[in-house]
Structure formats: C-alpha cells, structure tokens
Length: 246
Image (cartoon, rainbow, N blue to C red; front, side, top):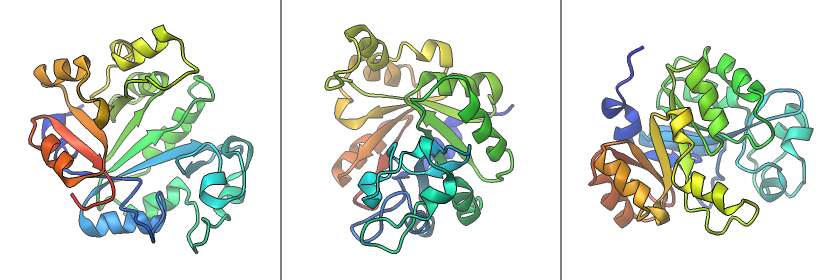
C-alpha cells in the first residue's frame, strides 16, 4: 500500500462542495458535477443507502427539501428516488453509479458517507464493492467514526477522513459525546488519513494541535474567496468550497 497524502489531490486540489452548483444548477446533481469537471475541481458528494441496498447521491435523509416530496431514503427504493425531479428544475437525484459513469476518473471524488442508521458495516461493504470497480481517485469521509473505522479495517488502501465541528448547537448529544467528537477522540480508533473540520470552528485547540503536528486538515464549507486564500496559505490543508470558483 502506497499512500502519500501530502502529495495527493486531497491536499492539492480544491474540492467543490456537492459539485460546482449555483442558483441555476442544484447541488449533488450530474450537472453540478459536470461543472466541477469542466473547471478541474475535485468533487465532494453525499451518499445514502436505499431500501433496496443501492447507493444514491443526496445530502439529506429524505427528499423533501430537494423535491418537495417526502421520501425517506432508507425506506424507498433507488428507482423511486431517482425518478424525482428537483423542485422547479429538470434535474434528478442521481445514483452513485451514474456519477461514476459521468466522472470516469477525470477528477477525484470525495464521498461523504451519511450513515446514522446502524454500524453493522453493511452500507460500507456495499459501497466498497462499488468502489472496487471504479478506476478514478477516491476518498471517503464521515461524521460517523464507525464508518471510517470500517474502512481502516477492511479497505485501508482508500484515503479516509473523519469529519467534525464544535457541536455547540447539537442538543440531542450529551456533553461528553460532544466533547469527544469536537476534540476528535474517536480518531484514536478509526485512524483517519485526514480531518475534515468546519471552517467557522477553526480556532478550536484541536485544530492548532493538528496543524502543529502537520496533520492534514480539510476545512468545510468555504464560501468566500478571502477565507479560501487564508486556508490555502497554510501547509497541509485544503478546502471544500461553494458559491465561488477557487
């Protein structure tokens, strides 16, 4: 296994958040991904698993915000999800395979695994089988350390990232759980290759510690050029960005 993250695209190619979307081109659509390809950016996207064990590209756990129709991703089949039109557009929610067919290795893809359902490894295993057929550059990331840990144990050749932020406004978690996540204590067991941290929380002590230790950090989501320049001027960092061209 030859992984050198410091010379990889992960730290050297700006990453378009949910594709290079805009007011006219919705997030996480084939059209947004095509725009990122044309601009030469890496692509960040979100995935869920459907009722029939297929992988669909969408950020939310349901389709209501994007389509106006309230389908729960986990409780509906892929064919039901991908036939929906995004509100007031001709664009649809794509499957991961459709994205792979479009990108075809032209630019790298950073996949965020949205898995708050269970930790039995089924979602990750299904994803990995699909990744093995794709020839382009890939990395995965997740807020769920169990998903990251699965890749550590079963697919260590794939770059993996642990996502986090301050958790200040997350009421459903206990203070100790928020403390663990904010301070990346779960990184000890999932051993991520990089950390993805919210840009607005960049002053956290853990970030200063990581940067001093030359640990790779990707900051999300950058929405202003000045912030992008600030982060890209640092060593061992990269940005996930939207609303402008980096």
